[in-house]
Image (tube, rainbow, N blue to C red; front, side, top):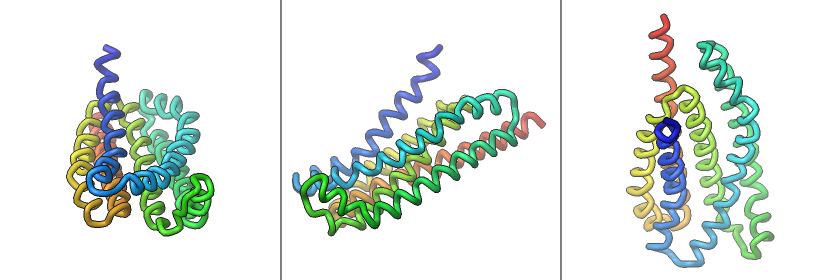
Length: 208
Protein backbone atom coordinates (compact mmCIF):
# COMPACT_ATOMS: atom_id res chain seq x y z
CA UNK A 1 0.00 0.00 0.00
CA UNK A 2 2.81 2.39 0.87
CA UNK A 3 4.52 1.68 -2.47
CA UNK A 4 1.25 2.34 -4.32
CA UNK A 5 0.60 5.60 -2.46
CA UNK A 6 4.13 6.91 -2.96
CA UNK A 7 4.70 5.81 -6.56
CA UNK A 8 3.13 8.99 -8.05
CA UNK A 9 5.53 11.04 -5.90
CA UNK A 10 8.45 9.05 -7.30
CA UNK A 11 7.39 9.66 -10.91
CA UNK A 12 6.73 13.34 -10.13
CA UNK A 13 10.23 13.72 -8.68
CA UNK A 14 11.70 12.13 -11.81
CA UNK A 15 9.73 14.47 -14.09
CA UNK A 16 10.72 17.47 -11.94
CA UNK A 17 14.39 16.63 -12.57
CA UNK A 18 13.69 16.17 -16.28
CA UNK A 19 12.06 19.60 -16.49
CA UNK A 20 15.16 21.19 -14.99
CA UNK A 21 17.42 19.32 -17.40
CA UNK A 22 15.41 19.69 -20.64
CA UNK A 23 17.00 23.09 -21.46
CA UNK A 24 20.45 21.56 -20.84
CA UNK A 25 19.72 18.81 -23.37
CA UNK A 26 18.79 21.51 -25.89
CA UNK A 27 22.00 23.41 -25.13
CA UNK A 28 23.96 20.20 -25.79
CA UNK A 29 22.28 19.96 -29.19
CA UNK A 30 22.45 23.54 -30.42
CA UNK A 31 25.17 25.37 -28.44
CA UNK A 32 28.74 24.81 -27.23
CA UNK A 33 30.29 23.21 -24.16
CA UNK A 34 31.21 26.72 -22.98
CA UNK A 35 27.55 27.76 -23.13
CA UNK A 36 26.61 24.64 -21.19
CA UNK A 37 29.12 25.53 -18.46
CA UNK A 38 27.86 29.12 -18.25
CA UNK A 39 24.25 27.93 -18.00
CA UNK A 40 25.21 25.53 -15.19
CA UNK A 41 26.87 28.38 -13.28
CA UNK A 42 23.83 30.62 -13.72
CA UNK A 43 21.40 27.83 -12.84
CA UNK A 44 22.92 27.05 -9.43
CA UNK A 45 21.27 29.96 -7.52
CA UNK A 46 17.83 28.61 -8.51
CA UNK A 47 18.19 26.00 -5.77
CA UNK A 48 18.49 28.75 -3.12
CA UNK A 49 14.76 29.54 -3.29
CA UNK A 50 13.84 25.88 -2.87
CA UNK A 51 16.24 25.59 0.06
CA UNK A 52 14.80 28.54 1.99
CA UNK A 53 11.22 27.59 1.17
CA UNK A 54 11.95 24.08 2.47
CA UNK A 55 13.11 25.54 5.78
CA UNK A 56 9.91 27.57 6.05
CA UNK A 57 7.65 24.71 4.96
CA UNK A 58 8.81 21.83 7.16
CA UNK A 59 7.66 23.22 10.56
CA UNK A 60 4.15 23.78 9.18
CA UNK A 61 3.65 20.34 7.60
CA UNK A 62 2.19 18.65 10.69
CA UNK A 63 -0.21 21.54 11.33
CA UNK A 64 -1.22 21.48 7.66
CA UNK A 65 -1.93 17.75 7.77
CA UNK A 66 -3.90 17.95 11.02
CA UNK A 67 -6.07 20.79 9.77
CA UNK A 68 -6.94 18.80 6.63
CA UNK A 69 -7.63 15.53 8.47
CA UNK A 70 -9.87 17.33 10.97
CA UNK A 71 -11.66 19.16 8.14
CA UNK A 72 -10.61 22.57 9.46
CA UNK A 73 -10.67 24.05 5.99
CA UNK A 74 -10.47 27.68 7.04
CA UNK A 75 -7.32 26.94 9.04
CA UNK A 76 -5.94 24.83 6.18
CA UNK A 77 -6.41 27.63 3.66
CA UNK A 78 -4.89 30.14 6.09
CA UNK A 79 -1.78 27.95 6.54
CA UNK A 80 -1.46 27.51 2.76
CA UNK A 81 -1.69 31.27 2.33
CA UNK A 82 0.94 31.80 5.02
CA UNK A 83 3.32 29.37 3.32
CA UNK A 84 2.86 30.98 -0.10
CA UNK A 85 3.25 34.48 1.33
CA UNK A 86 6.54 33.47 2.95
CA UNK A 87 7.71 31.82 -0.28
CA UNK A 88 6.77 34.93 -2.28
CA UNK A 89 8.73 37.21 0.06
CA UNK A 90 11.77 34.93 -0.02
CA UNK A 91 11.59 34.63 -3.83
CA UNK A 92 11.29 38.40 -4.29
CA UNK A 93 14.36 39.05 -2.12
CA UNK A 94 16.37 36.40 -3.99
CA UNK A 95 15.35 37.71 -7.43
CA UNK A 96 16.19 41.33 -6.56
CA UNK A 97 19.43 40.31 -4.86
CA UNK A 98 20.32 38.09 -7.81
CA UNK A 99 19.69 40.89 -10.30
CA UNK A 100 22.04 43.21 -8.38
CA UNK A 101 24.72 40.91 -6.97
CA UNK A 102 24.20 37.52 -8.63
CA UNK A 103 26.46 37.74 -11.67
CA UNK A 104 29.34 39.57 -9.91
CA UNK A 105 29.39 36.95 -7.14
CA UNK A 106 29.12 34.03 -9.57
CA UNK A 107 31.90 35.54 -11.69
CA UNK A 108 34.19 35.58 -8.66
CA UNK A 109 33.22 32.06 -7.56
CA UNK A 110 33.69 30.43 -10.98
CA UNK A 111 36.46 32.66 -12.32
CA UNK A 112 34.63 33.66 -15.52
CA UNK A 113 32.90 36.86 -16.58
CA UNK A 114 29.12 36.44 -16.36
CA UNK A 115 28.19 40.13 -16.35
CA UNK A 116 26.57 39.85 -19.79
CA UNK A 117 24.11 37.23 -18.53
CA UNK A 118 22.22 39.16 -15.84
CA UNK A 119 18.97 38.86 -17.79
CA UNK A 120 19.44 35.08 -18.08
CA UNK A 121 20.02 34.81 -14.32
CA UNK A 122 16.92 36.88 -13.48
CA UNK A 123 14.70 34.76 -15.75
CA UNK A 124 16.15 31.59 -14.18
CA UNK A 125 15.49 32.92 -10.67
CA UNK A 126 11.88 33.65 -11.62
CA UNK A 127 11.65 30.08 -12.89
CA UNK A 128 13.18 28.88 -9.62
CA UNK A 129 10.47 30.75 -7.72
CA UNK A 130 7.77 29.02 -9.78
CA UNK A 131 9.40 25.66 -9.08
CA UNK A 132 9.47 26.42 -5.35
CA UNK A 133 5.75 27.30 -5.47
CA UNK A 134 5.07 24.08 -7.39
CA UNK A 135 6.90 22.05 -4.72
CA UNK A 136 4.66 23.65 -2.08
CA UNK A 137 1.62 22.73 -4.18
CA UNK A 138 2.96 19.19 -4.47
CA UNK A 139 3.07 18.97 -0.67
CA UNK A 140 -0.44 20.42 -0.36
CA UNK A 141 -1.90 17.92 -2.84
CA UNK A 142 -0.13 15.09 -1.02
CA UNK A 143 -1.61 16.25 2.29
CA UNK A 144 -4.99 16.24 0.56
CA UNK A 145 -4.27 12.63 -0.55
CA UNK A 146 -4.52 13.64 -4.20
CA UNK A 147 -0.92 12.85 -5.11
CA UNK A 148 -1.91 10.67 -8.05
CA UNK A 149 -3.11 13.82 -9.83
CA UNK A 150 0.41 15.22 -9.64
CA UNK A 151 1.19 13.00 -12.62
CA UNK A 152 -1.13 15.12 -14.76
CA UNK A 153 0.54 18.39 -13.78
CA UNK A 154 4.09 17.11 -14.08
CA UNK A 155 3.23 15.28 -17.30
CA UNK A 156 1.86 18.45 -18.93
CA UNK A 157 4.82 20.57 -17.77
CA UNK A 158 7.35 17.95 -18.94
CA UNK A 159 5.79 17.79 -22.40
CA UNK A 160 5.89 21.60 -22.60
CA UNK A 161 9.57 21.58 -21.56
CA UNK A 162 10.35 18.94 -24.18
CA UNK A 163 8.53 20.81 -26.98
CA UNK A 164 9.80 24.35 -26.36
CA UNK A 165 13.37 23.87 -25.11
CA UNK A 166 14.93 23.16 -28.49
CA UNK A 167 12.97 25.91 -30.25
CA UNK A 168 13.82 28.60 -27.68
CA UNK A 169 17.48 27.62 -27.27
CA UNK A 170 17.95 27.60 -31.03
CA UNK A 171 16.44 31.10 -31.30
CA UNK A 172 17.61 32.85 -28.10
CA UNK A 173 20.63 30.75 -26.94
CA UNK A 174 21.06 30.78 -23.13
CA UNK A 175 18.19 33.22 -22.66
CA UNK A 176 16.01 30.74 -24.54
CA UNK A 177 17.05 27.99 -22.13
CA UNK A 178 16.05 30.24 -19.24
CA UNK A 179 12.71 30.98 -20.93
CA UNK A 180 12.06 27.26 -21.41
CA UNK A 181 12.79 26.53 -17.74
CA UNK A 182 10.58 29.36 -16.52
CA UNK A 183 7.67 28.65 -18.87
CA UNK A 184 7.55 24.95 -17.93
CA UNK A 185 7.79 25.84 -14.22
CA UNK A 186 5.04 28.43 -14.61
CA UNK A 187 2.82 25.91 -16.39
CA UNK A 188 3.36 23.39 -13.59
CA UNK A 189 2.50 26.01 -10.97
CA UNK A 190 -0.74 26.97 -12.74
CA UNK A 191 -1.93 23.39 -13.31
CA UNK A 192 -1.29 22.37 -9.69
CA UNK A 193 -2.90 25.59 -8.41
CA UNK A 194 -6.03 24.82 -10.44
CA UNK A 195 -6.13 21.31 -8.96
CA UNK A 196 -5.84 22.58 -5.39
CA UNK A 197 -8.70 25.06 -5.85
CA UNK A 198 -10.81 22.42 -7.56
CA UNK A 199 -10.30 19.79 -4.84
CA UNK A 200 -10.90 22.34 -2.08
CA UNK A 201 -14.17 23.33 -3.73
CA UNK A 202 -15.26 19.70 -4.16
CA UNK A 203 -14.31 18.81 -0.58
CA UNK A 204 -16.21 21.74 0.92
CA UNK A 205 -19.20 21.01 -1.31
CA UNK A 206 -19.19 17.33 -0.27
CA UNK A 207 -19.12 18.18 3.43
CA UNK A 208 -21.94 20.69 3.06
